[in-house]
Image (tube, rainbow, N blue to C red):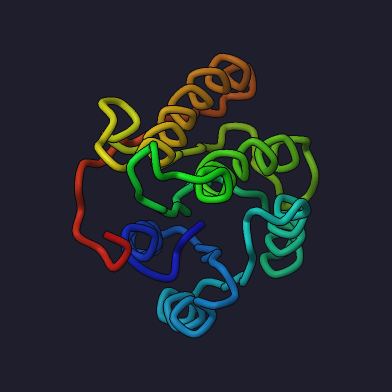
Length: 183
């Protein structure tokens, strides 16, 4: 997810370079760069707001229909936003937007993608969630972002033992500051 630019585009590029067939997912507003990247990588593009209640279903349906009934062998939850302000100045809407994209979307999509449906995550698959050092140590003006990324780390720790029996590994990667369009 979040594949049209920045870290997401680089993740998709490396995965394709290493032999994966990639499904690049990003919001409809990023449709042009998303399609260009997917075409360059000989993958497919799915314009999707991951906060949509049916996001998991739509990803699985896309994978199943566009990739011959295949399953997902590697899922990278990379989509993320910031809405930086000091905590005292952060309103409920700003807080909720960040939590919805960075954490709640994963909570909503994972059960759907793990329920055995066509286009879902295969046994033996991998889930990698992009966290942040802000989720470990916090960061001034990013209470909502730090909380969401700490939640990602907690979610990964909860999922890992639950999915081990299916051979599915779940990990979080917590990069520090990386200069991208978002930052």
